[in-house]
Image (cartoon, rainbow, N blue to C red):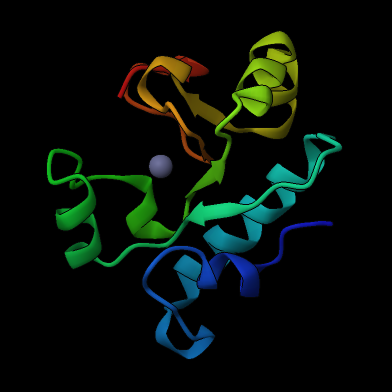
Length: 128
Ligand SMILES: [Zn+2]
C-alpha cells in the first residue's frame, strides 16, 4: 500500500482535515508521500506521526521546535523491529535518490523518522 495525504493527515493524535492545512503544508505532504512511496520498501509501512501543531510538538519534543513535522515535511513510520531503519542504512542510495533524510536509528528506537528537507548538518542520516 502507498502512503497518501489523507492517511498522513490522520497519523498521530491530532486528526487533521485537508481544509485545516495551508497550501504549502499540503504540497509538503504530497511531496513526502511521493518520496516515501518511491523508496521501494516492500513491507507495509504505518505512519505513527506526521503533521504536528505547535502544541503537539511542544508536548512531544519541546527541544525541537523547528521540526519538519510542523510543516508536513516529516513522517515517523512505526519500526519497532528496526527492519525499515536497517534496510535504509543498507540502501542509503535510496534516500539520496528519493530526496529523503533519516534521523539516526540510535535516536529513534521504535520508529523511523524521514524528512524531505535536509537538516543543518546536511548528513543523509543525521543526529537530531
Ligand atoms: Zn519524527
